[in-house]
Each structure stands twice: as structure tokens, then as C-alpha cells.
Image (cartoon, rainbow, N blue to C red; front, side):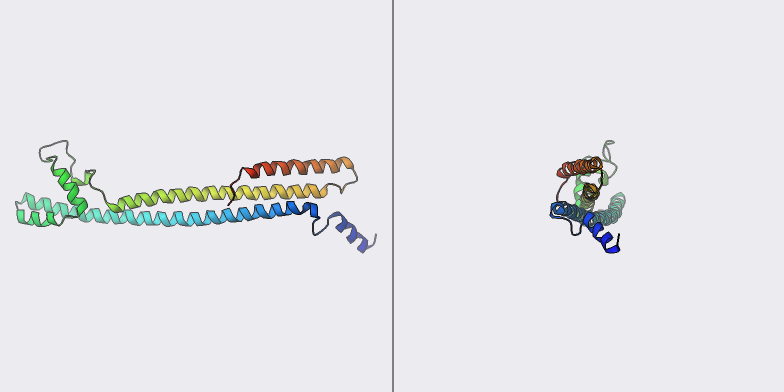
Length: 211
């Protein structure tokens, strides 16, 4: 057989562009690849936002530690002034208590800690002592966990769409082989395999989210 006849025989068996009957399957492959890329983008963005929220949460927690440290120093100075009966110094310091510390201290004093053994050891153990930085840190930590979960799910979805792409590519492979063999039995087996894989891929695809 001459070379030009061999080339013609090859393209008769494996036409390109694909015949019209295969265009839907090629379009399906493109759509699965597009969805995989989109969900990969969701994964990347969610991971970045999760990391940013986590870093902000750490910053707020560190700021809370610094704030509480300053509150503790102020409370110790106030307590020392009371111990030394320096009411003027004690009043001066108490008037400058931050709102969070003053509220907790007032609630603590109502429990008469000097005579009440059940009273907390300091205002910092009171439920009234709440720092905005701690609350913000906790909220950001929750957001970071949620974004990380979103990123993980998006990664799983992208992988599933890649798997679908492989399945539909395999459908095209077996479908393309069907009719190329001299044995009708082999051709039929290739066609059945293609149909089974296509049905399986279609059923699985219907359960996947679309972005």
C-alpha cells in the first residue's frame, strides 16, 4: 500500500475534526474541564481567605494579650494603693480603668472577695471581663475554619470533575474503536463499554454541584 493510501486509511478510521455525532461528547469533555478549573479557582481563593482570616485572628489574639497585660498592671497598681491606704492614688487609677476592666471590677467587688471564699480570685476571671479583641479573634477563627472547609470541598469537587473528564474521554476512546474491528462482536463490546461508561458518568455528574 502506498504512503498516501495509508494516510487516507488512517483518517478514515480516526477522522478529525470529529464527526457531528461525537460533537456533544467533545462539548461534554470541555464543560467538565471548565467546571474543574472553576472549582479549582474556588479552592485557591478560599484557601487564601482562610489563611488571611487565620492570620488576622492571631493578630487580634496577640492584641488581646497585650491589652490584658496592661489591664493587669493597672489593677495591681490600684490594689497596691488600696493596701497602702492611698485612697487618692487608688481613686485616680480607678477612674482611669478601661470600660472592660471597670465593669468586671465592679461586678467582682459586689461579691465581697475579701470575705467570700467563693468569689473569683480577680476581676479577670469574671464573665463580665470581655475584650473585643478576643471576640474578634474567635469570630475570625470560625470564618477561617469555614473558608478552609469550603476550599477542601471545592478541591474535592474539582477532582471529581477531573475524574468525569477521564470517564468521558474513555467513552470517546471506546466509541472511536467501535466499528474499527473486523469482528462485529468486538465492535459491539466496544460500543457497550462506551454506553455503560457514558451512562455511569452522566449519573455521577448529575450529583455534582455546578459553579
